[in-house]
Length: 167
Image 1 (tube, rainbow, N blue to C red):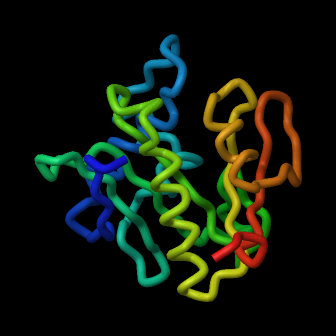
Image 2: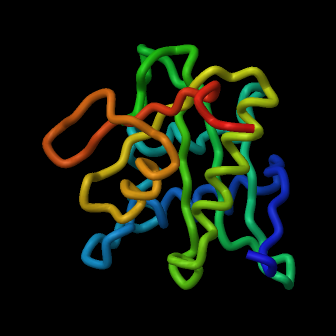
Image 3: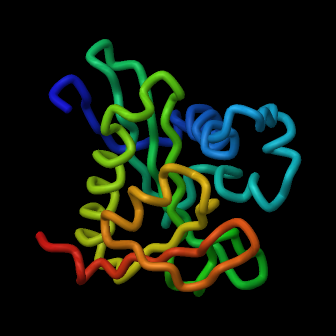
């Protein structure tokens, strides 16, 4: 996308990351969790609470007017407080959210590729995520090389081995 910019996320982006977590949770039109509901749910809130920790990293996609339209970030969670896509303490979990009006325009793919490149540059060997099978993003992750490592009733935990991505 030529009209899209991508920049590193900063501590000042914490509220936007919450917005993008809410977008990620509400990927289907019939789900309409409020910001307050997402932040009150510890299993979701830990993806954004206290952003930005020393090992946190993220990217923000911006439109031509420099307005944020999406974000991708990874965070290390532990076995004591695992995320939905937890595989191990040394594999960060990836979260991606795109403003609804920008979905289907390549923003998610651009963010995904850029954040995986950033993970490689940091020497991170793998990243993981959780995605509901009905979510159109599941096809994106599979197309980009993520593989399912654990399946649940409606969702899969997927892992991407950084070394497998061509430079």
